[in-house]
Amino acid sequence: SFIGEESVAAGEGIVLTDNPTWIIDPIDGTTNFVHRFPFVAVSIGFVVNKKIEFGIVYSCIEDKMYTARKGKGAFCNGQKLKVSGQEDITKSLLVTELGSNRDPETIKIILSNMERLLSIPIHG
Image (cartoon, one colour):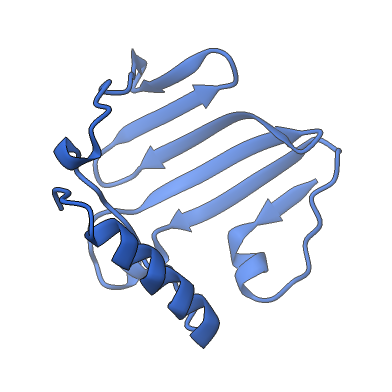
């Protein structure tokens, strides 16, 4: 099976089953792409029994290939990635994205979450 982000965005009903399924977003960061902001990627995931097996993200402008496989770790251009180990959120950089859904209830939830995050003395 295949699930494409653009199909979902166009309103097609998609049901994730237990079948092996490719999930593909050929222009991940469409808004960035449209506005010529250089953070755009091709994202591909593979799911079996509704569980992610592996994923690949190619950051086109940066020429970086991110890969991850269940139980095997994550890599950037073949180099193993690791988390920073930082446990104090006040010393962390927080990056978020508001999404494209402008439904009033969705906006209310997003802004409420943002308000909670911004009340923490975070960086960014």
